[in-house]
Length: 233
Image 1 (tube, rainbow, N blue to C red):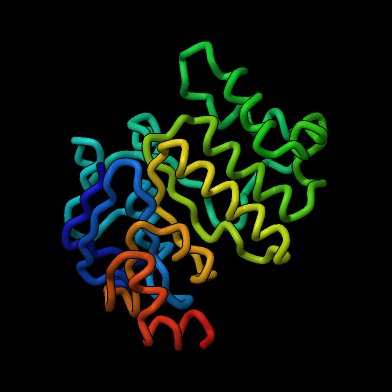
Image 2 (image 1 turned 135 degrees about the horizontal axis):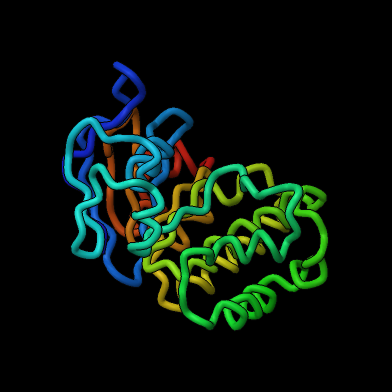
């Protein structure tokens, strides 16, 4: 599905990601955890065409992604739900969701919209409300729904629990599990390591732009270094 080999990326002359290699197989959930500044978001931006890699190879579903524009990568089926929600505040909830499927030419968008409303009933209730008036948790649900409207083969989630109350974090975790169980492939970047590793089939620990550990979600949850640094015990 996704194979990344010796990826290097950064900003200007500053290299943030130093030659990492990893893969995401179809229908699995792969998690990247690490402290702020470890290179997680830089990695995601390189995958999505929002930042040009310095070197390395990115292959998705049989296609090389290096040099492709972001909208062309979306067309191939790789979609990102960005950190900080980034909804369009003046547009309604429904308009935000419909915009997620703007590149689709099929006639099933309305059916998918109803499925999003079933997953997040609050969005149905607020469908005519301006997205900027929603709470942070509701905006995160909207951002997730907007990404799903593109019918991604692989959906990348960047810090979906950031800044949310514990109750809303649990709702987001439940939604991610439903998405995973539906067969959608997931690449998840998340500082809530406990939540992320419970969802993960496989996981990588990124430190200072390099992978320090990798294994199954269960293996990393039980690793003493991960427990001490990311799980709080």
